[in-house]
Length: 237
Ligand SMILES: Nc1ncnc2c1ncn2[C@@H]1O[C@H](COP(=O)(O)OP(=O)(O)OP(=O)(O)O)[C@@H](O)[C@H]1O
Ligand SMILES: [Mg+2]
Image (cartoon, rainbow, N blue to C red; front, side, top):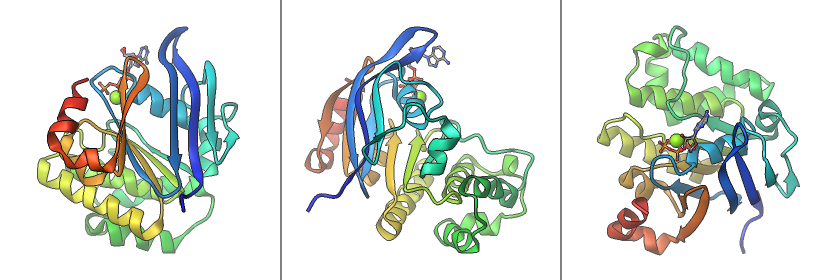
């Protein structure tokens, strides 16, 4: 049996200052899936993620969360519905400790949850180890884990990640991919991630949308993802 659709875009257009970037994006994400959005630099991947979380308005078409249009909702309201967002470049607060950074995420969910905190530390033990360290002194990979941990404090049912591998060394990329797959398996959280790193795509994604010039131009199935050359070819579409 196929699970319910959690997120859908229908003919979505958006852009900056009247200049369109997304030009009719259609995608469908089901509950519990891990789906990658891939494509070259500048094709509109981050623009798509920003439109999903509500940092950019939909100019035409629609974003639906659990079958209801959310185009009119500001980003913080979408976060409250259960959509978590980790931006490209991570944006942790460098002069705050790891624990303080995580506490910022807590305010989005509205409830204090020690359970959630222990869950985060179980998946990301490095955050427990470094909990009193200033976030700005962490490595790129540790900051990425912190940014993900912070978002999990809001108990999202859907997490959007924008290029989680960016600036992270290969061995850590594999670690983060493994943790995210485990998190998905154990908690059922749906994950949509933008990525250009072929190893991270193949380690995490169950399926893949390929973007070019503001549109989805192809979809890669699980079988197609098995073949490294196929993925490489689509990354350079
Ligand atoms: N704030 C902005 N104002 C105006 N144009 C923008 C802005 N952000 C992005 N763009 C433009 O929109 C287009 C798509 O950018 P976007 O950041 O979505 O690409 P991307 O696929 O995420 O690329 P990358 O892989 O480099 O992160 C590009 O032409 C870019 O120059
Ligand atoms: Mg981007």
